Image (tube, rainbow, N blue to C red; front, side):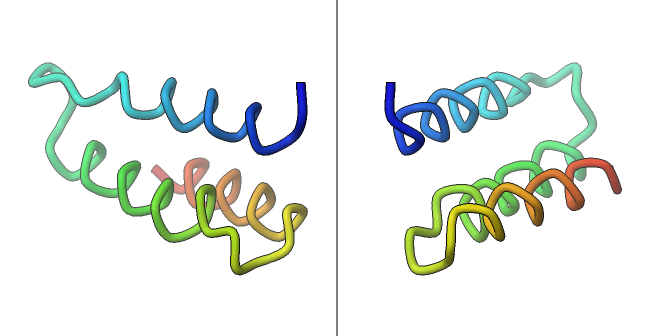
Length: 59
């Protein structure tokens, strides 16, 4: 399994928190992090992973 496939799988798991039981701000920020960092192929993979992790830890 290549790294892009793994990152897609991680994005799918993050998307699963799109549930009304999860606070709206958490859902919104998780979606933004996924779009801006995790799935942003314009940035290097290590930067994408590190920034996604850091931003999710802030939640």
